[in-house]
Image (cartoon, rainbow, N blue to C red):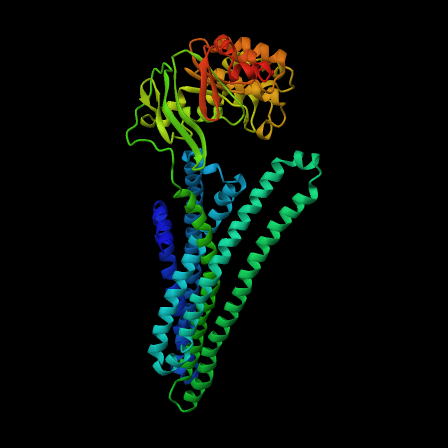
Length: 575
């Protein structure tokens, strides 16, 4: 119920359509309940064989046709407006889930697969449509019909009504049992479906690796296991549904048997009119129809609840990196960065940075060096505020990063990362991604500075060339140059270069470095690199080792001290 209430509150924008749906439900149900009364009257006239009543037959027939027409009209209103509200709500819900994903910190994604998340946005939200457009309206309709029919049956003949409904307590117990048994199965089915999507996404993205390492059979077995697992989970639920549906149908039929047997006995004794028996059978069919329908609806309801739970897990996920209620909006940033006793760990037993204190002055070029896994990328992730320090603070121009708005913080930064991501769009759109509104000349100038224009101008479609998913139509070096062009065009006071030229050849790297010298002028720049040529011009080199700052100085100062940096240079780690 708590989940259903949350869904209803979330759908308040479409309440008016749901109200129209309720009108359709009420009108259609009233028409459905009224029709047997007209049939009852027509049957009574036929039994009485009174010529004086003959003139009423045609009007009653037309009335019955009108009732059925009204029932069809109300059915359309109910069906269309419930589906309209449901699909519009699902569209909004998918956008809400995506918006939530955009503000969740990187910690949320550590143990999540892309396919799993996509399954929640697409597959699980589809189940919410089933809930709003089918399950809830069907429950309302059938519940109203049950109450209405039961009332009419007791008005016609209380004794026969009580006998015909004797199996109802068993049906209620059976429904509760079914709900408890089947919901966990549907939860498992939705989870397996998410895993299957995750495996498919991974395998399609990694198809080159699968083929290179001849792992076709291994990946076939993995996909087959998830598809078969999902099918088996669904079959377990269907087995329960078959037992439940059969039991409901049997107990429903018992009521009909009672009416035919005992009702016939009463009719022979002239204790009940024939037309009442006919009406009783019509209404009883109408009564147990909803009971059988509720069995199917119960299955839809449990599936929808399982899907909705997975959707709301994202919507209710905790945001680790939170903004203050009225955060400071940065402007005219100079780029004065200070780490004050900063410590950070991804998990309780995985401390990455320990007691980091360092000052980066405005316009200063700072390089981060050290062995793999010592926290260099974590350093810049904290600066971008993808995470918050576990201890200590980071300030920018005197403001604690936790006190400023994320939008204004990231607005003043340009990033070039090693694992370049390009959207499946044109080169022009990818370069201009960080600077909306940039014109063709500005985009081309940035590309020239990043030495990307060299290869773009050779392409048939030039800057209109589609790069493919994740830029798969480009080489690693070409993607990096596009990423650098994107950062150059963005033109921000703080520049972060994380292995910006790792995938380019030495000659291209020299050209880019010369161009970047120009770009880094009067900008605060943080550099992560493994090439000495990139590092040695830095104003300050920070040597990290086992999560701590081991040394700070210029290239010459660090060499003269003969520490870790000198050793790494000596063994050509920074050659």
